[in-house]
Image (cartoon, rainbow, N blue to C red):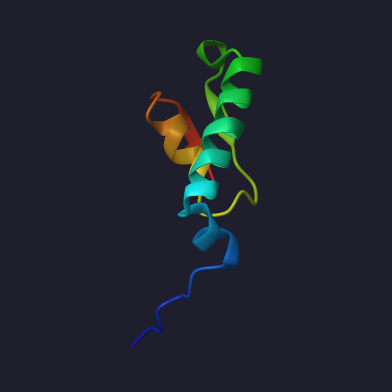
Length: 65
C-alpha cells in the first residue's frame, strides 16, 4: 500500500485566490514574452504542481517535466 503524498506549501498556496492571481500574472508574463507558436518543447523545473505545464499543454505543446 502506498502512502498518499501530502501537498507542499506552494501547491496549497497556488489554490488560494492570491495563488490563482499570481499564476495568472506569471503565466501572462511568460506567454507575452515568449512566442509560444515558435516553440515545440517546454521544460518545466520546480514550479510547484506543474501549473505552467498544464497551461502549456492546453496550447498543444510537447512537454518534458
